[in-house]
Length: 296
Image (cartoon, rainbow, N blue to C red; front, side, top):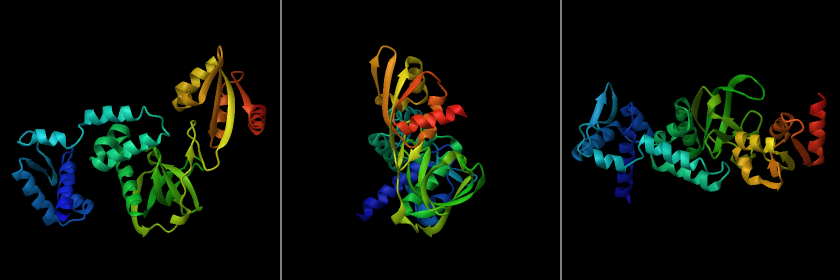
């Protein structure tokens, strides 16, 4: 068992070295919890196996031009093009699909996370996602440095306990230690993720909610029913593709959307943006919400 674990770690280190800019010795040592001496010993083993490890000002990576094991290297991971094509295929699956979430997480756990993350997210967000993954794995608190809130419109640090990612990894469910609530934070809105040594303090209060087709999250979904014109039907498919499976045709140029929403903000904005094209069938409280907003 010990030999198997060592071999797995060596493969993981090798995968990390197959990158564009290289890795430092301290980065590899810290990430795999081993001494710098062990890292260099791994390098010697890789060289003997035909992988030439290039040193560029302290950043180490596989020299594919001179490595005799170049073809074997290609089998250990997805190329950038392969990762992009695969990620595009996975992300055609509905956003709230459990299968999709498992596939993406499996890719992150088996392969160099940058190969997949950079194909799906912006480069500057990749390290944020990795740090959040580590915090979830080790059940640690983090500081979201200079987080830009979409609701309060302010920018400040937030101490949270990351719980789980949304299916597309654009957001992460966290327990906010300041207001003692569970909510989604966006990786794109934070300047830096600071990992803390503090373990989770509120695990028993952790809870993951739902995200509706209008990208609004909640723990108390509300059932709605809307009758859409052809114009509204086409627009909702373009702006919110996940709505398709909740819509059925009831007549020529008339469609019925039956689904659940987190609150009325997202769906209300869509309805109010298309006056005369959408009829609220259910619930009555949503009709009152639209009437009130329309009068304003």
